[in-house]
Image (cartoon, rainbow, N blue to C red; front, side, top):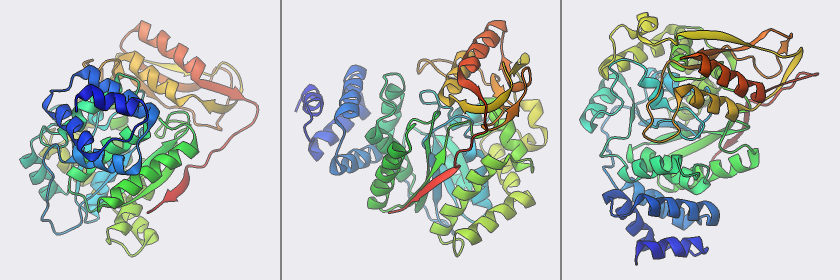
Length: 434
């Protein structure tokens, strides 16, 4: 069947056969299908959806478009994935903590997608850190350190690597089916035994509605477990930035502070909960409560921080990064306060607008080929429910120039709403299992 016939069939609401999906993924991988055809297929799936059989076939075909890793290690191979948000740097602390608890974490991460930040972009802010090593290096670092946070190599799910980049710039990021296939093709290719998913809901998430987030989590959990990887998910709040900051080097500095004992409460709670979930699933603790104690111990002792430093060094970064991170992470030339226009309580934050403000500052991409300014962004966000006075800082802007400052102010003016009463939202809404 011609590629355009496959696109038309899905556009018109038809069900694709396994052979048709596999043909499309093969063309996606070898480049015989054009970027326009890939974008059209993505839009057709966005509107017409896929049933479970189609989705499992798409996920496995994308997984099998490259190498599927096999491991021979003395502990379980585990990972976590977040559906994306603002100030979500959990992976930076989670991977070394799990390694310190006896797990092995080959974390295949992505770059910024849509309005959200990307884990790889955060690591690119560290001089020398290789986010795109070969498979041999991934195997060596995971075996020696216990964790490696890298991007897709040419060998792992190459079909997804191309699909991901095109989705980012064609308005098809939010598709439940394409998110599921993208995430799981990489995770299953990494040869995981256990996986935990952090599915966000709220103003800064791809799924603003918790009902849709629940549907996304169910899709991910069903497909992953069906493929033989024991998986559960937590639904977590993204109605405000998770960390008190947003921006690549800024979030990296925040992660270093966390690992050195200065963790923010909301960020700490989500990180520990996700760690505990996967440790209990993998049999490294008797239950979630015992797993939580184990995770808290490796943060308190500095063992997680030590693993993080070892990983940075093993992947080409400075050997003294944890001791001297401030000397290595770039700082923006202009840092100014953004202040509250009136007195009251922080009643709502358009968190997506905060992510878009980071992009406008240069800290994210408008197009796939755009370069990133790692120094820009925000920190010291006032959280939801905070009582503020007129003129009191709500955040700090880190900008390259005055034009960036003014654009960021305008974005934050639209993002922050000051009301008359405090508000609260649940941080972890639900746990979803098979």
